[in-house]
Length: 492
Length: 140
Image (cartoon, rainbow over all chains, first blue to last red):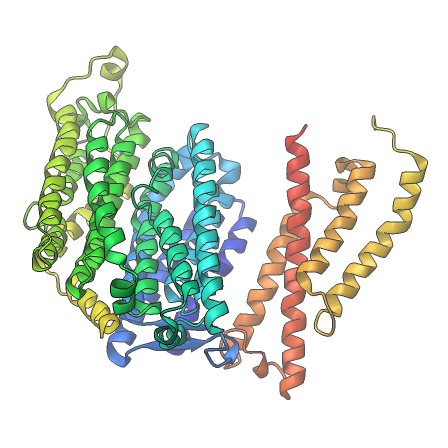
């Protein structure tokens, strides 16, 4: 049975999605989605152990040998990202019930969970697949279902947000498909492992350059790297609260994985960095992303939007690490990805708690919430410390490694920007704290509102993430140790 | 029904629809020998239903094929496909490794392809009909 784990990781959510359509009771649909998410997490943990014990796992779909057959290939990198995706999916789903019941019309809840399960299938599939075309297919599965999920948001603006994301996401996916198509034309293979062997021989081909360019643009769009990030703030701000939690912690992270897999796995790292100058594209864009997005975040009145801009900035840190072009840089990017999933997932989960109780994420409506929702606000403060990068938090560890990787490469400008970005983060986190703790509600409507603390079912997962934020600030054996093994196998 | 359809249109459809459906089945079950397969067959079959709905109105079509049934068909097709995969896993092969289904490589592959293409056909046809119903409901 253990041999089937790579396939089960994808098949279980894939089969549950249509079953979920048939379930008419909302609570049962939620239960199924939760059980499946937790099962995926268990499988991901088992895969981590299997990969540590036996090395790379290869699963041949239909029994056909790769490179002709489709291969699911789990190495350290995939197992690491699978754990992040499945863990955040489980935490989101456990917390989701009340929030979803409030925000989604009851006759659509089963379809909502079905779309969620398809999205999970796609995200997990991207990570397990060892076949470039399959990665594209799973990318489309996850993207199409996330457009539908975002469109189910609370107000009509979610429709335009989803449409915007649909257009941008489709352009990105098309570019990736063109890139993969060109690679197939050149080499006659779609298997990533096989492509890696064949690419060094054709490195002078102009078609290969074109393929690399298409892939870079397409993946950057999916990651929401500056200046291709415009879809992200709207999508995150107007999606249902729980979907923002889920997507912020998984979708862009999986896209970062695709970037690492394509540029350091499919293309050998030295070719990506030296022949195609990946760093020269990523570094300036990441630096601008960190500065401008953090700056814009400071002026947002809608806190979900603020955190979405903050995500664009944080993505800049990850691509900065990758763009430094050293193994240490890529490791730093991975660790950043890990900790950011916890922190940003947690912050958006706290937003979901606030939306559940007050129905608003506007800054002025946060006045006095520190008293009325003490546990939620305390979680925001603690996670905010992680986002800033205060020592003893996971956020510190990740910023520290990006910083030291930048200094190691002699990129002083990047180092200054990393610290500067943190200072801007203090500004916008402080704005939330100021409103929540030091301002009294101005409007009579808010004063009379008897807001009370979020339900325990949401607070417990939220505090699990808060504890995780501090735990991974002290014990980095998994977050850092596993990431270094993952990257070192790519850079070998 | 307020929209009057001409006698010619109705009678031609009465002739064409069975032929289209039969052709869909041909494309479905000859997919492994000739051009065709589940996707094309599903679309052709859906075209027959959509033609009926265009001529007689969506409500008439929904009396024969209600939305709920269509949704069940969507689900059934995917589950047939995935079910074949899971069956091969239970029987000791990899996911979708048809060789374990029967003795003999050719026969087993034949059966496997036949079943999953049937799943594809059912789902694609039902999805097409569902999209048509939904768009038509929106336009009202």
